[in-house]
Length: 157
Length: 136
Figure 1 (cartoon, one colour):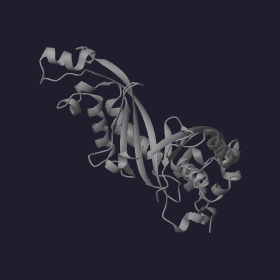
Figure 2: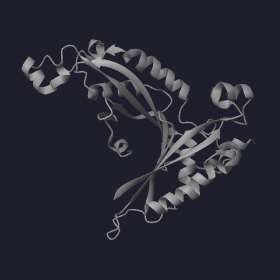
Figure 3: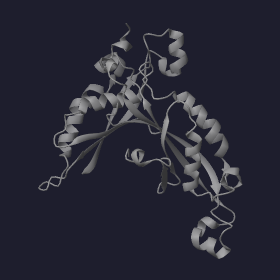
Figure 4: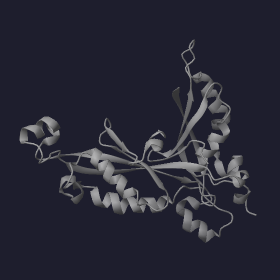
């Protein structure tokens, strides 16, 4: 039997760990809703309502949970996760104007809504359970979403 | 109950290799991390403990004592070491970020007076970290 199989914890269930990976993307947006008048938009969104838009360096933190695989020592394959993020997150949103994208035609491009959209994207990741998305819009503002059924997951902070 | 977090850093070498697999399979699964000459990281460890605030001292735990426990149980064993070759638990467990978090939990559990271990977080790099809460 190889060394890897001699792990004394082999007879008990595998430990459940949480893996977090951070991705960076830059995008512009403008906070504005057609439900409000020009004055109401200005009142609600202030400088974020500038018609010419503004932008952020977003940091997207993805947290996945699962048993630590005995053979690989991992919750999921990081290469597979990075490819998934490149194709579905970075290629989609980096260097874009969020307001022009289909995802933000029916809702305002706030980072709250962006966080929920990114959660929807990573909930399809096949190798581990998504437990939360956290997005830093600036170093002072961050937003988290743990899904609709999130009471237990939100405790893990 | 109050949560208290202490941070520490250690620098270690490691590589990923499963002895049950062929060299080709290790290379396919672990890529660059399968280089058996090893590579290294500056790891950041965050240990969070939970406890009640002592009415006299105002502390959950004595931070100096917690620092000494981390030094003795973790840093003295991991810092400036090759994890695969010099740290016993990684003779039978691949030293991934996940397994380092699990192993540090096991090293610290029951060693911190007047508080319970809540979370072990290990950053391999600023953009990659693993959390362990003792769950199985």
